[in-house]
Length: 175
Image (cartoon, rainbow, N blue to C red; front, top):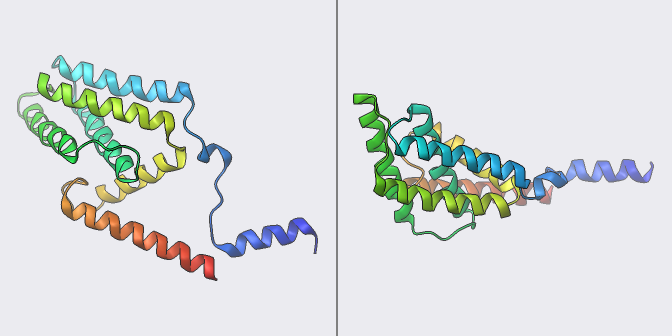
């Protein structure tokens, strides 16, 4: 058996997925700039009352994604900041559905600017794999019956998810 074959067999038996170099690095400056621009444009349009349901949904998604990344250790903003944004965005969504005006208030815009700034910093420094994990967590939430990933129930499930993932990794490593 050649050395490279043994190495491949060892990797396969470890049960761990190996990450590419790209997954271990932060996003490129251009990619961060593109994401940031899209997020800030959505806010600017909704701030003027010219937004739509998609743009408001993108703002909600970035609030949740920023929160998920913070829960993974990338940020330390008060949870109340995310809760205030969530409540105000929900209210803006209800107003948008009722009267067709998708607008965020000046107060909410200030909160969202703070969250977008946190998210921009996260994207500049966090490995892509952490962003992908946070997106996967957000996807699992969207398929759950929970109302918010910021709720206490969601935090209990997040800890359970992480404990299950860690137990799975430990078990895989022992085999």
